[in-house]
Length: 295
Image (cartoon, rainbow, N blue to C red; front, side, top):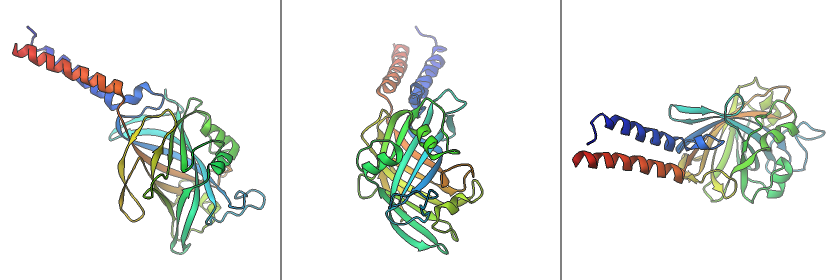
């Protein structure tokens, strides 16, 4: 007959299995937790004008108007779940987790004196490819990558920045697929609509904020995401797969990008079948121990 002292060992085994379930990303290059994840990033953007010019290059204006595109790169340096977290990228055992985005200005409301609010929609797949070098389906606004190179660079040239963010395996695609998906940004009071003025602020200075709620688009090797509630511009909770918010900040003067951003993106992953099988095995073992105890 089993001894009572066997129970702690069995419980420890079940706890270990639960740990595997909680961090199914331990068998992935991108260390995602099973369930809710908060991804923290550093990003940078440039302004592509509707006339084909780029802010700061040749005669390209830097005023953000309807029809213009904000195109950028992002590097997620940390994955969190409650108090637990995993650092990724340089200096860690995990690959970089990067992204590129391409969003088009749909509306522009307000003034520098009161703050300007922009709403964004997807650009065309042709523009996304020309801007980022990534071929995507229609309605895509962001593409995520599992990047083993660990070479993300937003402090140099635009070309080097995009190359460093896209030289991995496509992980996820995100975009506006239903009418309730959203992406908007509001500049701070007294901040002009010239994107270069955002970048000229001291590094890290908050010059405004942005929020988005997007759906997953089929494509990539990353896990399927569950939905979660995300507040839109009116504070109405929308059901989305990607819920993000962040601040518009100053940048490194050496960078060719026009401005920097700091953001957090919440996603909810589906536990892998192998993790669920392990959990089932662990619980079955505990049930077997209890049945033997009764016998």
